[in-house]
Image 1 (tube, rainbow, N blue to C red):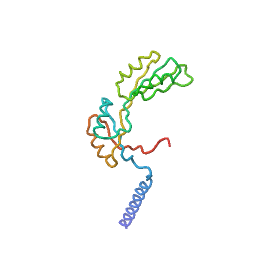
Image 2: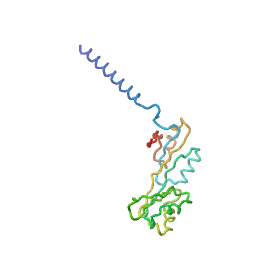
Image 3: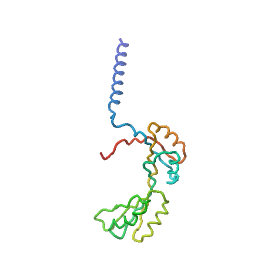
Image 4: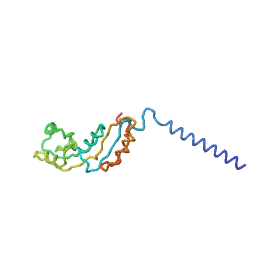
Length: 182
């Protein structure tokens, strides 16, 4: 009698487990893969330089799709003319952007000047300090990472290779498979 109940419980447990596994597999969106084929994300130690990273991936013949190694400065400026401050840096290819960070109702315009990291923070700071109307009050650094393109199907190989280097902090597939603003 007990063996029949035990067999029924085992059968019921097996059926429930099968349904749970099947449901989880069905719940995945086939149009949204788990990672982007041909893309990996690599993080770098703080001491990694822009030129070292670019040279490394060029030697490996891997495409740098996006590279984040920059630093920026928050500043108060004398004029409320944002366009003027954008024009000051428009021909400096190391400046990613100059944007307003103050609220419109504030008396003083506050801006952020973001550099791509090709130069040292000190070098870019000196560029800004040439202008007396720009008063820096905060500096910051982006986390250093890159989106790298590789041949589809070789993502795991490159992850294993990149994890061996002491200038990387992580290497993984690009699991951001959708546009968050859709």
